Image (tube, rainbow, N blue to C red; front, top):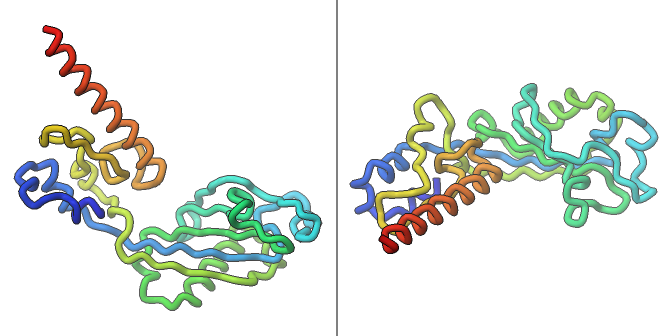
Length: 206
């Protein structure tokens, strides 16, 4: 995690900080695929092909799958249309492959090809649609590697250093290393700070 680059060496005398350096990272690959129709529109073939009316059709949500190498995906043209919808075009699927170790040596074209094949297996109706554009972004070190025995290495929000609290998806919280986990950790850090302030106020009142 990036925290490893920020923690002063002298803080490693505390186990809570030293354990952070035992966390390893995994590579992550983000693949974007643009189509000339709506991949996740499953009910109406006419709507699936409709890119001229200005309508947007399909599943407007973040999706997860256990049957593909990408753990989660979304149609950005539906979930974030102000940024990603393009008039006259359809779905823009963003698929996140993690851990992506087997994919890292592959060319971008091969990664896009393999991802597209898996999308078509998930949504057979999309085989009639053309993938008109793709983009592949590789991150060699991204999320921490989740494997047995590593959860206990994640630090709590309150630290042994006076006035220092931690927030980030790598810290102890209820979710995986993710945006949701980062938000949860921020709430936990705020709670820990408030609790410490209340504790000091009570001591001062005594």
